[in-house]
Length: 412
Image 1 (spheres, helix red, strand yellow):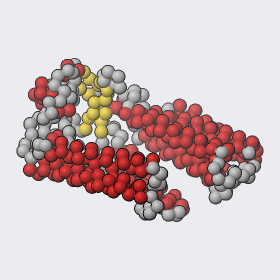
Image 2: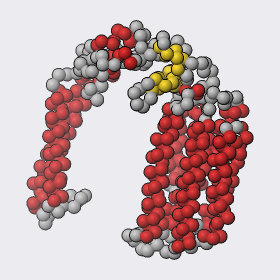
Image 3: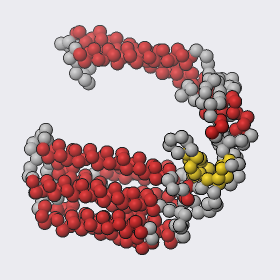
Image 4: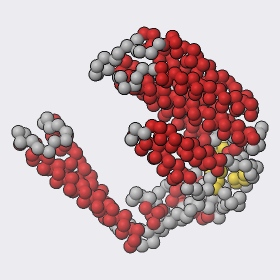
């Protein structure tokens, strides 16, 4: 915060106050929590405030409390430093730290657009003071805003080679409204009002659809002159976009969550710390037809989505609906989730799979709608890459989940 405050306020900080706050916080923090380690080593448990039989803990806790007040004073000094800088500080010059990074080539305080033009390869190795005038004159990449839209230069991960231009959406209140709708859904789930929680998902889905539609770029899709000797495609016509990279990162995190669910299910089935898990009560062989329909529908959905046509999108949505119907038939046949933690986790995994199938249906319908609007062409893949990626992931987790359930039903 101290480092970036000049870019935010455009003012100089009070000299010495931030340094003093740092040392007071450092001493107070370590004096508080290091002594807590000592009390732990002496056998003091957590969350107790009375210990008449252990007088040796008294002076350690008293010392820790004194240092906690010192730490609080340090944070108050830090807050005072920021307030004084924002209200009474003198105007600061560019790059007050003499930093080698080009971040400080921005005007202070930074304008809404940050840079009049972006640094390019020939600016590498130069300090902020050496490139300030060059960037302000528009001698970098994406100078000005001649197309009256928010453009962002996307580069390769290795080497930072310019790849394409991403067109960012404008200001909207949709994210705030959407977060409020998701909050309502979560609160209804916590309150146990599951039927109402299901209904609360409808406005969530509608807001996501409207937001996604607002981010579709349908005009001025010609290559952009990024620099006098460089023209790049806009993201609807790029091969690898930020959206695809973000979805890959999300699916990696999502896969980690799925692996955690599998581990929990295995642990509660074999090495549960409480009462032993009862034998599986559902008839695994009787569920095989429905399980087969579920797996086959998702696998076929992944295949037809590879067509990249309106027919493929429509069939993909229909097959996912079939899979959702099969799942809704399977869930009541499983063991009562209140019987044991293992059975509860099975229900959670069924809900996890169902949510992914619902998202797959929505993505297939969104892609079909893009075809209807003429937004999918030979050079514009639209939402197809993300749709296929999600469908493949969903089919994969369903196959693994079904294999685990069948194995537990047969062996258990």
